[in-house]
Structure formats: structure tokens, C-alpha cells
Image 1 (cartoon, rainbow, N blue to C red):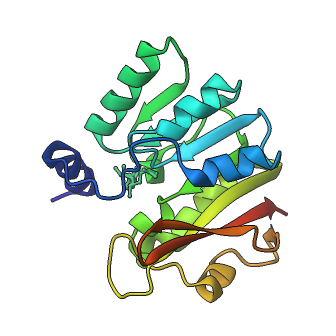
Image 2: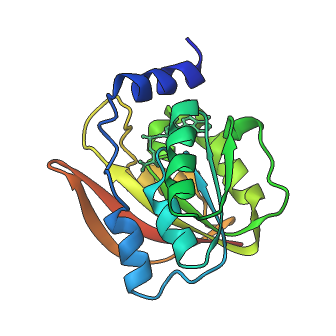
Length: 192
Ligand SMILES: C[S@@+](CC[C@H](N)C(=O)[O-])C[C@H]1O[C@@H](n2cnc3c(N)ncnc32)[C@H](O)[C@@H]1O
């Protein structure tokens, strides 16, 4: 079964344990602390994309991509209902290039959804998609267990994956509980 079908079948079966049902505390943290201001922003692996609605309604120029048709359909329906507009892409981000680069990438539960063999390729894409002074607003998933998805994003592995020659790491901003036993550690990574 291809990657698209694996994710699509999860949406069709309603087995979307990662889905928060509303815009995340991660995004609220960045917004409430005035760290994230309206700009051109990408949400890769957006899923149902509640954060996309929040961002668009605050004046961000949002592009969101997901490989699962049902997720994209749900997101488009939510946007239409609120008469909001974003560029919504159905596709595989490994074979996609944006028309224009981004100021910010909102990375939430996308990296950790991928097996670690794909992480370097993903990091290369993130770097390419950003403008020269662009930033990733990242939430690194901590599951403390083997296997996935979600796959555990050990901080030392993240530092290796996003090396300091290419990325300027902030200090840790905060740690958010995703669900009991799972947290997300928030960092801003500036493109060098
Ligand atoms: C764990 S879900 C997270 C969804 C969303 N970020 C959230 O926080 O609810 C991972 C998402 O990545 C999407 N995805 C996985 N591989 C992808 C790929 N190669 N290209 C685009 N989307 C992909 C899946 O369809 C799924 O919606």
C-alpha cells in the first residue's frame, strides 16, 4: 500500500488519533507570545488543518499540503464554510515545489509522522522551501517509545538532523502536553 493510501485509509476509517479537533496549543503559544506574525506560511502534512483556519483568519498567506484526499476535502469544506481562502494542495510534499518560498513553516506532527529514513530528505525540502531568512516553528514530538507513527524525535537526533551550519536554533520555548505520556518541545529554527 502506498503512503497516500495508508494515510487516506486512516481518515476514511476515522482512526485519526493525532487529530486535535481544533487549532493546537502549539499555534496558540506562538501567537499569544507575539512570536508569529502575519506572513507567508506553509503547513506541511496539514491533515484536517484547524491551524490553517486560525492562520488565515488572522491575515496569514497560507499554503497547506497533504497527501490524503479526505483531509484536504475536510479542510477545504471548513474554509469554504467560513468564506476563508488559502492555497490547499493535495499531493506528496516529497515531489512538490512551491511557486514562491516561505517566511515560515509551521511544523507540527509532520516530521514525526515520517519514518526516520525520510527525515534527511524532509529537512532538505524544508530548507529549500524557506526564504533566506525564513524560520521553522517546530514542535518535536516526544513519545519516549520505539516505533510509530508518531515517531519519537529525540532532541539530540533533531540537532543532528538540523545542523547548526544550516540552522540557527532558539532556546527551547516550551513543552506542551499532546496527550498523556506524549509531549511536544517547541523551538524556532532560523535558516542560515
Ligand atoms: C499525524 S498527521 C498530522 C496532521 C496535522 N499536522 C495535525 O497536527 O493534525 C500527518 C499528516 O501528514 C500527511 N502526510 C504524510 N506523508 C505525507 C507526504 N509525503 N506528503 C504530504 N502529506 C503527508 C498525512 O496524510 C497526515 O495528514
